[in-house]
Length: 364
Image (cartoon, rainbow, N blue to C red; front, side):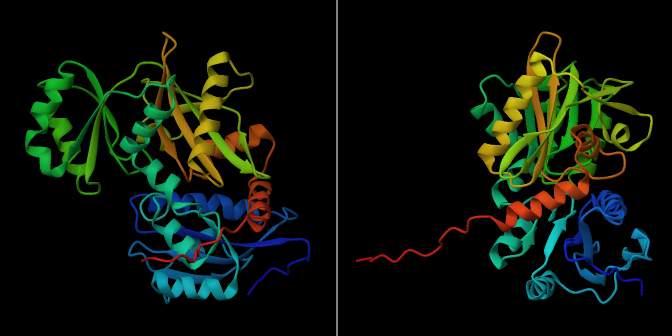
């Protein structure tokens, strides 16, 4: 085995990835990139353990081996349930970088487990993760707390209402362009733009049926014409840092699943100078990050229209950390490596103030 000898000034972390989620593949890609970055000499971070969560939500344990490729860890072997995993990790008292995307990984589930049993790592609080992963509820929060920000007109459908979906869609959006998307899935899975017409309504219905296999809610939103931007925030040294903005250019004016995951389908341009509008959405993003209590990172997506309106689209509490993902480009633009970001997370989490949980009082 090629285990790494750890110098006294290196910080040890473990990585968890995979998961029972439609974004399992994305999590594996994020792990591969982070793994490669942390295997770089003198980065200051040493991988201690790797935890692979298979598609049935069982966890396999691996000691780090420098001679291994990232794909060597992507095998379920002697896997255990999450309860056994938590006991093992608590005994090791290590710091875990959470790379689980989507369901169970960034929607409040593992955050709740981590908070209840006391796992150290980049899990964060339940509230912001759970809220951000429900697009419709996050939009409701933003529209209520940010008076200068608009949200797209939205029809929420459930599979129980699917029989009346066509009538409701036509009633609200007949003849208009719309975006159909799942409420709680990431990676823009099943997210597509349509025109509500007799020709395309059957295609919309097909997409809704596909969404309801994975999500209990589907959203039909007005398509907002404009320029899409992504704003990333991280917490460093207990302060919210807003990273350089990314402008997203696509050939068809829509940033869907294919554009996000096919090289050449979109240009993600790092903004070297901030316009007045970009400064505004940066302030909004910083406020949302702070108000909701994100503890490590989040990415917020917006549309800026030609008339100057700003529309909030969604938030991503554990952004993709793949080789071509947006957040690593933002970090590079800021001059911060992934390893440096993780080092900061470990340092500030070690200084986290623990709140009391018991109060003695009398009940008559």
